[in-house]
Length: 524
Ligand code: XMP
Image 1: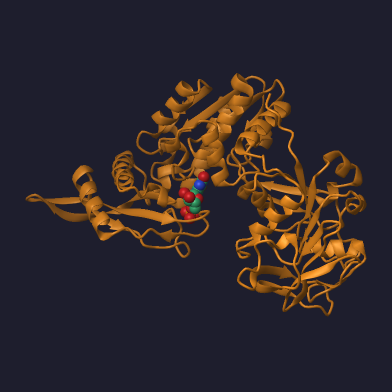
Image 2: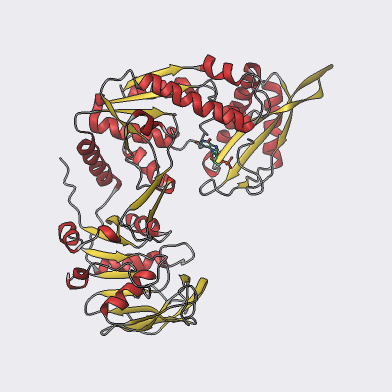
């Protein structure tokens, strides 16, 4: 077995919205880290975890409030480098003998600071190697309170107009504390601080995707034991990578259920079946339920009604097939980090509320299943890297996202089989055009929507009365906001001609130039 014992960095989470980004920055440096809510990090936990360095995250509370969160007492005697960020800085000052002044939020007289700020260097420090090359550094501040007196041994290394102690440290103990958030993009040089910190702590940077894969496989084996796992496979990147990873861990203890609702793209069902059943030799159920879905959708044109019908039927069908798998105790899902909202309860209880986005919502409880979510620490591009590591074909890994309700939400108005057929053909031509022009990877998502309107045209000597369609292509980082893709007129003209010539049933092509917001990416 590959050696998976690596130097570990512990992130103590005080509930900041951006704690996950600290982990992300560290993985980019090939450093293994784990995030643990502060309530769980006792002196005993610390000794057992044996971190090589510790980062204290930001958080919404005020250290001036009685009962507010603290780091474990043993931390500052433990002898490893510590970096405190925002609330983490204030915790360090408070616990090490300094003072924090409450700001507007906690009712004190201190200054609050939210947004972009500029820090100037006050002293040299190895943590700041590569910083202040151009004088000031832009940072992102988000604090109500601020440090008003440094703890003994600390010095100031950087100041901003509203944070005289923006960067502080006690170099003899390798304790560092910053008021801003180096992990966010608005601190453009922030990654360098993390790089310097892990270098000071002696990390060798040997934590790769290969190591992640080995560790994830071990964790899956440990969680599942000799029980069985079912996985709802959509053919999308996330569930595919999760399935291949779990299959590598437990082989035939995994069964994948692929629900074909008749709303897939051209050739998609065959592609998924070939990939998983034939290439990976997985236990695989191909639930061909086109009749059921299209039957129930017949005559429905309201977007929410369509979505609800599809969601309900998907659960019914999945459950029907899954219940035939004897001994299944786990449900695998390709949940990613951004889907997971992990928050610490500040209302007094020690509980950690973890709210997951369930791809097959409600199922685990209904069926008494436990979840296996091996991707929940990863971001989308990391999942793609893991997929490459697992040997999934690049063309599969790089595919554009495809929504669960499929073509139903790209067919405004009534869904009919002939319309779906026309849509599939038009979409295939459009994607072929995009690939031929080498644009596929530049675009977050591209598709055709068939419009519920027929228009008059002329082809050859004859009149046509066919459907109009809309082409959609957007760039995006996470699907939350999007810009339309600026195709050239030549590309659009060529594509329109090809679609009209090659797809019977369409005689008019439009290009959707709406950004999100105010539009959405899908049409429904
Ligand atoms: P919208 O249309 O909301 O889409 O701007 C944002 C992203 O989410 C995808 N999408 C879905 N994905 N189930 C999914 O798995 C859904 O019901 C769903 N609706 C939208 C959409 O394709 C885009 O990538």
